[in-house]
Every structure is written in structure tokens, then in C-alpha cells.
Length: 321
Image (cartoon, rainbow, N blue to C red; front, side, top):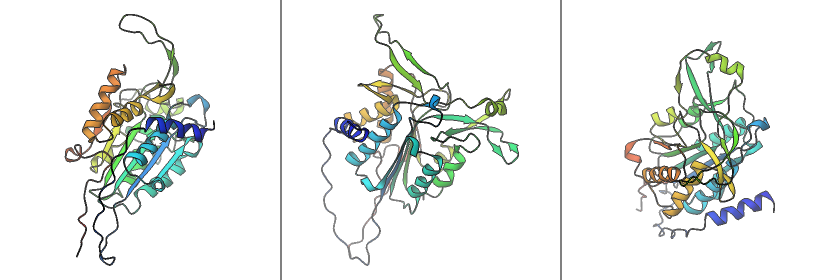
């Protein structure tokens, strides 16, 4: 079975919950008075394969494929309004090109999603010839360049173009602390019985020594990835705190990100009808029940946290006269 068929097979299994009934038809309007319709768009990125094979992961492409399927099948995102970047295609240039597409012509009643599953890291960046006085959390594209990473500054250039009232939701299944180590661990039951060894890896890359040397012996403030997003009243869902590790392991026979797996199962259990706050709380409980110490983060304006997940914040009143 080829990769495409395999992903489709798994999607059909995972996304088997019944779809909600379609909304009732709305009254038509005079074409000269009709305003542009609400739009739903998503950029979904999953990176298992890096140019340095030592960094490779196993569950990110599957996380991304399943997220793309969930958005289409249960949140009414049209297939041609989703851009899916996996592995070698998820270069910095390609991610930025799709971010430009994502925010282009955004309107206050649109719903936009940026999902990223892959490695994160943190670096002390340069501002011209001078070193910055803080550490930058970054995303790690397939062709990661430590001197030109996907930092909050880069993302902010796109997110600032999104008007107030637009639901821009950013989901990060990565981490910005820890060590990028792949290992097998042996689970132990409460009765002290040892289970089968399991694959586990952290979604974090250690910077090279010359990059780490920039901050050696200095305590610097960390500028979090997504700070600009939060400042602009958008919503951030992250797999863990800045001091924790985002894990991936085998779930139901497939490597997955712990956060992505628990998040998806929380939505499926609720028949895809959760608010942001409910989705965060249910995911946190599922992570804990599966033995993970990582605590997912939800940040954004309080007035939006009880809104329906991935739905427009504003409902446009269509003129009928």
C-alpha cells in the first residue's frame, strides 16, 4: 500500500464519527448588494524528514494529514482551501509562501488555521552585527538555517496582516526546550509490571555549538514563539509549556505526537463540538491519563476562549433588501 493510500486509510478510521447535518440554506441576496462570503483557510505542516537525518521524527506527517482531514470532514474547510506541506516540501520558503496565501485578503468573519508539527528550538539571534538580548523560540523547517530561522519576528510579519475579529488559530505540536533524543522506554504499570519497550522522541533540536556559544554563561529572557500572535488577540494552542518537552510515541500502532493524538481524540469524543477552553481542558486530561507530564497551553482573548473551535468569531448579517 502506497503512502497516500495508507494515510487515507488511517484518516477513514480516525475520522469515522458522524458528520453534523449541513446548515439550512440562507436567503439569497441581490448580486449587487451581496458581500464576499466568509472564508475558511488552513496551512498544515508536518515534518518527519530533515536534511540532517539525525533530527528525523516519525509522527509529524501523520499528525498533519489527520489534522487536514479533520478540518475538511468536521469543520467545513474546503479541500482547496487547505495547503498541506510534508517533509521535504516543508522548506522555509514554502512555509512562508503559504503563510502569505493564508493571510491574504483576510476578513473579520474568516476562520484561519496554522498547524505545525515538527521540531522547535531556541537561538540567540543577531540584529545586524549585534546579538539580540533575548533567546528566540523558533520553528524548524526541513532546510533549517540557524542564521535564518522561522522566528516570531518572521511569523509576526504575516499575522499582523490579519484584521481584528478574524479567527486566526495557531497550533504548535513542538517544543522549545529539552534534548532531541530518540529513545526506547519501558512503561511500568501501577502494579510494577514491565510492558514492551516503546519508541519515544522529543520534538526539539539542540542548536550547534557555535549558535549555543552566543548565549553561553548569560541568562537571557526568552521571547516566546507566538507572543505577537497573542498580543494581536489571536489564539495559540501549544503542546506544552516553554520549559517542557513535546513527546511523540506509538499510539494504536502508529507514531504520533502525544498532543495531536490526545487533541484529536478529545474532539472526536465530543463529536467535534467543543469550545477552545473545552478542547484544551479535555486534551490536558487525556495527556495526563496517558502518563504525559507535558501541559498543553491555550492563550488568547478571554472573550474568544468559549467560542466554537475553528469557527468564525463574527457572524456577518447579510442584507436581504
